[in-house]
Image (cartoon, rainbow, N blue to C red):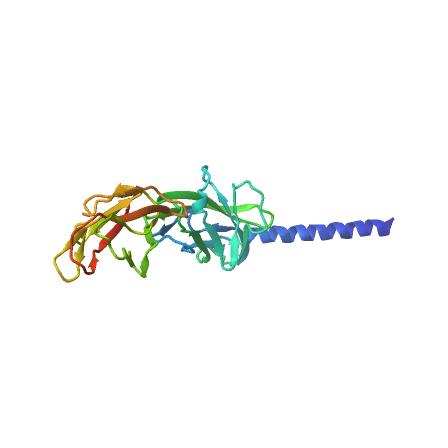
Length: 299
């Protein structure tokens, strides 16, 4: 019986020692954020395939107790509205991509918690936690500003919360537009439409071509002819009038008013079919040409 009671006492003593060690660790680890709220802004001034907008932010933390200690960082959404899938941003720190939990009461995932070692103690020194935010700026996204609010928590290994910070993420996409001429020859920003040999006795028509437009907002298209809607002889003063039509409607070639309109496009863009027609004419033989400047403006 005596040996039994001694064994029980030894086990109890070990439990008391372990409890004292845990209490001492907790007493020396009281990490907190240096600031209670921060804001990061990302602006997409350019949109296109494989373009991502990135920005860096640092959250500074310190230990108000003595000595260094460790903690974990966790992100959760506070915004009540559903985030726009086209503006889905991601957060990374170093080589770790962090999951953003749906709410602060959501269960942790395998990628939601970032280990933060070596938080300096004493309250006067702090260390930075680097975060990198990014989102894809691809065609199909709409221009304008949006905002999401995240709750950033410092937690211990059991999920107990040491401190919290409110992080506002502002996303802004500027009105952006891009245009390509389809069905024409040429390179860079100069396209060529070859009407071939014109027959003065009939209506001559160009082969089909058109404009493909991508835009993050409503847009307009204007056409400005260097010769006021005429093909000019390269040597003589002769001119041959012509018409351009967009989707069957006559185009204003003065550049004074838009001849085509569109809304924010999806990833495929909008296609505007164009056609040039030359009615019967009287003019001397030779080479004729005109230059039309096409301007697409995003609203």
